Structures are given as structure tokens and as C-alpha cells.
Length: 236
Ligand SMILES: Nc1ccn([C@@H]2O[C@H](COP(=O)(O)OP(=O)(O)OP(=O)(O)O)[C@@H](O)[C@H]2O)c(=O)n1
Ligand SMILES: O=P(O)(O)OC[C@@H](O)[C@@H](O)[C@@H](O)CO
Image (cartoon, rainbow, N blue to C red):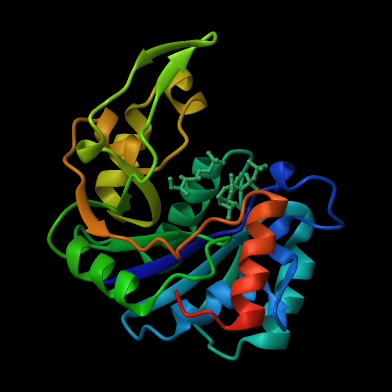
């Protein structure tokens, strides 16, 4: 069984507002966010290759960064697609074309903008994807989740059953590909999560425990929190 890592860095970061570059390239401590994330993945020896999938317009920039900060030869920079799941599938295509695909090959996918990922979470994902075809990383919801539409509350689900989805999300590659190919364009348009690809195809998704500190840097507020954590070296 071969395990690959795929770091999803193909987004524009619109919710971060007007920044000179997409948020994954912004500095966090002494290095760009993307590099902080890559550094957590190169610590894991199980990965045969670590794909960094970046926006088409930022290919040279990403290659320069990787060249500057990363010596691990397993790290490969390729370009992503319009939506997050297009980026994911570009990576899968690269794996297939360059390494070939065996039935039990797996990929651990991770948001480039979750630099506080830990070795424990990566290890748990690898262990789980060796047993299950799809794996999600979640933390119990802290706030009550309210489902609503047009200023109207429609449901307040029992909080004990609610989780917040993080990454990594890990997959048997052949299962993921087959599930993605079954989706309608309408289903693809509303996906905010890769594990849902498998759920929609009727596959079971196994869960591993994430960590509150594994935040996704999405807004300027998240970036402030991330920088405060780094600057004060708060170990949370
Ligand atoms: N076409 C895309 C869109 C997103 N991502 C990546 O998916 C991760 C999580 O997505 P999100 O935080 O939503 O990033 P953006 O899409 O860049 O942000 P926004 O929605 O605010 O534009 C990020 O690391 C982002 O780079 C990607 O690889 N390819
Ligand atoms: O907000 P977007 O749909 O661009 O990004 C999706 C990601 O937030 C999401 O898939 C993971 O972080 C886990 O839920």
C-alpha cells in the first residue's frame, strides 16, 4: 500500500480580503503559511510523495518558495483547479499518471491553510485510511449548530451529534475517484467538503479526532489568532 500526501493550496483566499497574495503565501512567524504546513508533512516518512497543489498563476512563486525552504525531494508542486475538489482531482490525476495506481493506494489531503496540524493527527489519518476507504478529521461542535434559511431557524440539531469538519481527509484513491465521477454538476457545485463526495456515493466515512488548534486560516481574524499563537509560542 502506498500513501501520498496532498496539500491543497489552490485557492484565492477571497474571505481574507484584499491581500497582496493568496492567504496561503502570507507570512506566519518567519515563514509563509504554506511552508509551515509542508514542514509538518515532511516529518512523516510514510508518504511516497507530497503534492503541493497551487493556483495556476502562482506556480513559479510556489516552486521558488519550496526551493528556498524545503529540501525533501518528495515534495512536488503542481497546479490546481477552479474549485477545491477540482484541485483535489488534479492531484489524483498526477499521482495516477506519474506513479500508477494500485487498488489499495491512499491519499491524505490537507488544507494548506491549517498549519497547526500535528503529527498525531497525520498518524491517525494514515492508520485509519489503511483500514477504511474514507476518513474525516473532526472536533465536537462547541457552539450549538443552528440550521436556517431566510432569517428563519429550521432546526437545532442535538449538539452531542454535531462535529466540525477539519482536515486531513484521507481516501482510498480508487474509491474517491469512482465516487467523484458519479456526482452530478449540481452536487459538485455545493460541496464544501471532500468527505461528502464519498457520503453522496453511499460510502461510509470513518472519523478520527482532530484538535481545536488545527484551525483553518480563512479570515483576517483567523490570521491574527494564528500569528498570536506563533508569536507567543502558545502551545494549544
Ligand atoms: N480551487 C481551490 C480552492 C481552495 N483550495 C484550498 O482549499 C483550502 C481550504 O479552502 P478555503 O479556506 O476556503 O480557501 P480559499 O478557497 O482560498 O478561500 P475563500 O473561500 O475565502 O476564497 C485552502 O488551503 C485553499 O487553498 C484549493 O486548493 N483549490
Ligand atoms: O470553504 P471551502 O468550501 O472553500 O473549503 C472547504 C474546507 O473548508 C473544508 O473542506 C475543510 O476545511 C473541512 O471541512
